[in-house]
Length: 105
Image 1 (cartoon, helix red, strand yellow):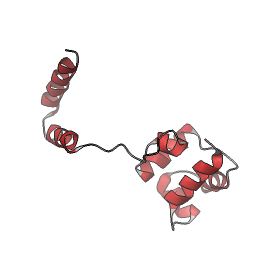
Image 2 (cartoon, one colour):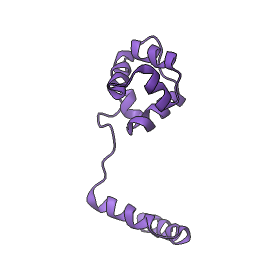
Image 3 (cartoon, helix red, strand yellow):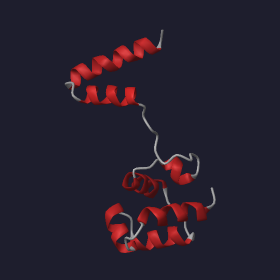
Image 4 (cartoon, one colour):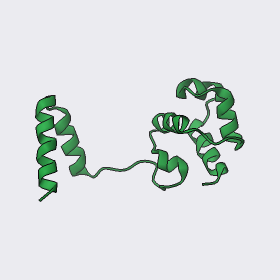
């Protein structure tokens, strides 16, 4: 991916925030944000992770390896996740083992 593509995605993610405000929210130094946006520097893996977490996007999206900013779940997947979140930890672990066994058939 070209560094200008990452730069554009970071600028878009920052929106109306100043670079200082964006730096504060992401935990990335303001001077690094400036360098990333100007294309003078490519974000480190650590910075990519922070940017992805802030923007609720994938690192692959930031790198141009995926056109979709996030991976969408279908309704059934959302239901399964929401139901599992309500279970106690030990029960959730049993559900994971069951799903793994079903996938290995």
